[in-house]
Length: 329
View (cartoon, rainbow, N blue to C red):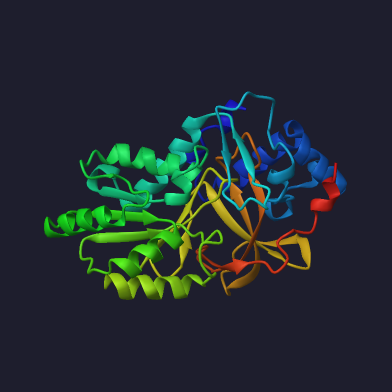
């Protein structure tokens, strides 16, 4: 559907219409999504509001091939996990759509990558060759064109030396890392950052005891003597990301939207309310997911604020979202 490919042109005024167009496209051309909608007795012709669009349980990316139109994938992103878990698989038709999404989102929040030295501390992800996060970091490192930009696997002393050098030169630096690795680095090599911004991407993956984002940020702020830690909210099943520039308050790019569903009624979905903050389970609309599924019911609990910013409070108590059993093929 070529008319829908330019998701970057989405505006608050055009978002709903574009989302409804994509819904109809995916309802017709995505067999798994169509079957899910059919199981819910959804009449697609009566969907006139994005809050009425069915959101596909994210766990179905672990058990089904989620594609809109048949295609040979350019890449298959796979989630990280333990040996006892089933990983999600996201078949991507066109890598350029992913690159357009994350590069333009980065520019919205941080400006030109060439203005930064970008250091990526992603050890567990770098050990895999199908990580969307590694692909994103790799491209941003390339675009930064800084001689010190790069990945750091396990050599934390070299990372410390590089950061000390960059701080002395007063160079704008981004340290983007998975949570457990940032905590390891903070414990072993505390230092004062004046010109370095820290972005945590989440993820303990059994490496450490689970903590709240607030607890993680408190430790990192204390170790690096900074007032705030930034965060990235992304996942294997999405081609877009949201960012927090402090306080755990996230904002989306114009082609991505967060909605909240009732935990005891997955089909009852709310958009932002101008008068109050709404809490519940997190749904995501990602217009970049044109050739997979743009309407995802995640395993996360969150809050949606009146200005459409949001917070992630943690995982739902029962991470197997109600509705997956409808597609037990």
